[in-house]
Length: 145
Image (cartoon, rainbow, N blue to C red; front, side, top):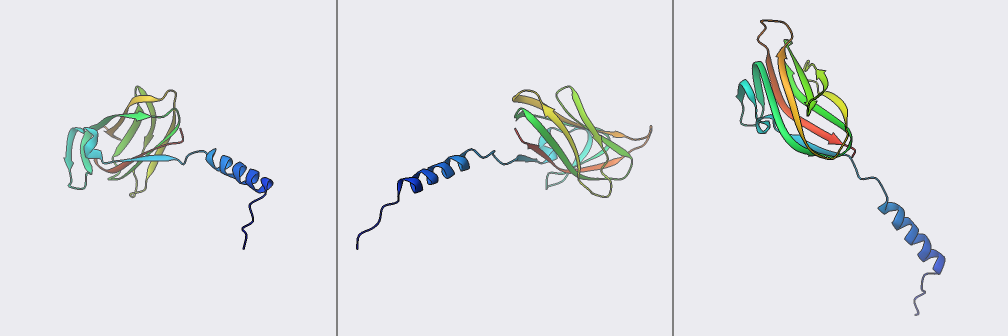
């Protein structure tokens, strides 16, 4: 029995479909960071799973490559209700979050140029003289760039 070859229109349609599939926008990328790997400073304790708990003022810093475009930084952790967490890139504060009841908190911003950037998080008491206990479990960095 002789096999029938595909017709020219079938081959052209198949090539167009493959070309369109190749032009899709790549999915969102995410980087999961353990806070202990982000160079903690201040009074803190670390756990074997990579979480960091700050008692009072503290800071996490990390240099990483970020793509130009929208950026979302999600912080997963717990707070005793006495701390705020500032999240920023380079010399720009992107936002301040409160970690209430163990819910994730996110800030969004835009990266103007692709390249190496300094990601930082600062823990500070909400009231003068307070000694907060702020536990950071993981930080997710997402980009549509």
